Image (cartoon, rainbow, N blue to C red; front, side):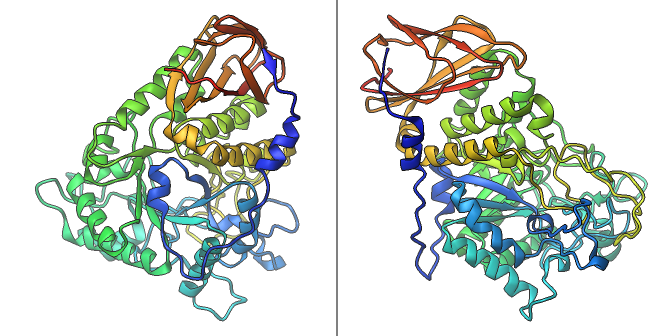
Length: 515
């Protein structure tokens, strides 16, 4: 194979050139279009920790020592860094007020909403004379100045506090008590009605949320556990939002892997019915990567996901749900190599990239004070509660982040490469490639005589030798190595390579289009 002798770093410097042109003063929402074209590179943040200033480095925000938790205003300081890393969309975890009764954690879970049409006072800067609404508007406007879109998380359930105020909004069990969905002990299940009859009280609650976030300038909504409300409920709400903003994007937390309701008393609407109701996309099942051992399994997952997105009147899309806030840190699962694999799969597959704050620097989200008694609490819970290995959504805790500079560099390079190769990735044909080793996956994305070849070793303990079979490939094929550690040896219709444990290899091939 004749490898074009261009330094990888030179290629990346060209791709990584910082674009400093900001948008015009008037922001025009294009998130839905961006998302449906698989061009969104999404970064999930918790405002309460995103700009947190833990000066004594104990992992907790000590207000009596003048430390500041994350706010809408101090979040602005991190936007330029996200822009440089190739992020063009932010998913903001819930910004609604949180319940304090029967709470989880000392600050309360972000998903235990005590109101749906007001903002969480914990996210306001006390140093500003601006109202909390104007602080939120400023954060979103600053993101827009950097051409970063913003969508907001819509909690699925209500807090116990809200139940005490408005019990008529909630599902009751046979004994007349509000229903606890799954094991989410801090929330109660809202009664959204059925396909025959939507509950207008709950609908109006969510309609108020839509009005609020559109008024703040947000570009879309992620619906938490969208499966536990009727399709008719969502169809009416989505149509309402689109009457205000046709480009308003809706992402459903739903998967073909989820087939059961969160409670025997809950509605269950499968992902396909949600897409038919108007959602632009869903989570898919890429979070199952952690359980996949063979290349065949991964290829089947990709092909199944691509197939599931077809057949709708309007185009639909999916996110790379490899590592959401509900998933354990990839660093704890298979280490740095696994993190890198997620980065490169996200950059080369036809999907919207999705990452959690701290992922890009290798945070393991291990909080040493977890489940210990707190000296002070802002809820009725005296203990720090966290899910091991997951970003904290329950306490006033440190800003997420690790110290892995190589992962940070790879993250930025891959995200910007995704933008450079967008015409190939988004318009091209996905072509599975056969390999000689069962632990190795290989695929190509090909478009107009340009082809990206991705190969990966799902064995995270051992190096493997493999042959990758590619039609019309030969020793004279011009290849640019985007990411390699061992040089492939070309043959007729194939190449041989040794992949290190967990290694992902990326090649760009010119003048080759696979049918």
